[in-house]
Length: 328
Image 1 (spheres, rainbow, N blue to C red):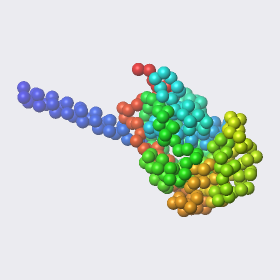
Image 2: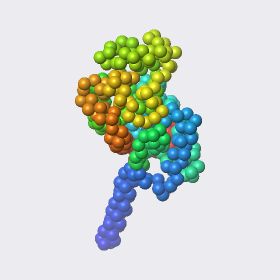
Image 3: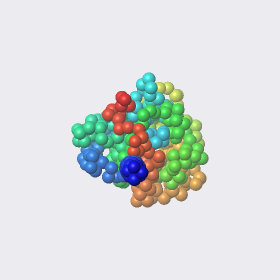
Image 4: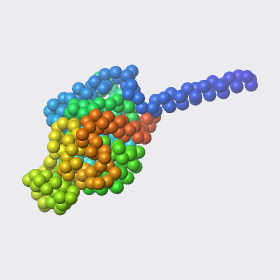
């Protein structure tokens, strides 16, 4: 009996060890995560993103921003995709998201295409956002990188954390460095990832004060005059809706964002803060003349941001609908 009992305990131990080993393995992100469960996943996402950008090129910047705004709240877990509901603390109406984040419908369409390819909801919404951001950058002439996959989707959002964690367009350099540090990102990551503003547009309300009230010490006067043409000084909703390019070539992922900063033509205060005599000046100057260095560092920082404390293994879920938590 003792021998039989010892055998049972040994067998149970082996089962527990096997299960824990499997869980530990599945909890690791990997660029090959869907190779067996849905080998056509990445090609499907790329095809869908390319089609969206053919319809509206600006969507590339929006999908990149969607990923950034997801990762800075909780983690890269698709939390900012959740619609408001009685038991859901949606991040969509948080101040940093309400006026600058779009592309939710694109993620919905990619979800549907993936479900056809994979035979069901195999790929998480969080991974869809991560891959769509990479494919958008590539489609607009930027660098590529291997996206680590295997994230799980969160069961709730956090609008308060969205208001706290997402960097404001009015932040100074000290605030920006602290903000990125809270996400496990250093000064180089701050400058490289800010380079994502080389594509896209932003609202007049985010740079209104800069173009009307700052002096030639921080903004080029001719640039300020140019931006005033479509951004009146009064803070009305109509004025806020006016859009301007974040750099001089908003449809091309290039180094002009940094060249603009060197010329004091950064559109947002948080952009120009990177080149105002502080510790980030050297990196801005380097990226402005070295495309290879910027592309390499941007890709590295995107991977680093995407890998910060993800939900994996048995955490969260894979949502059937990216806007809603699966019913229990």
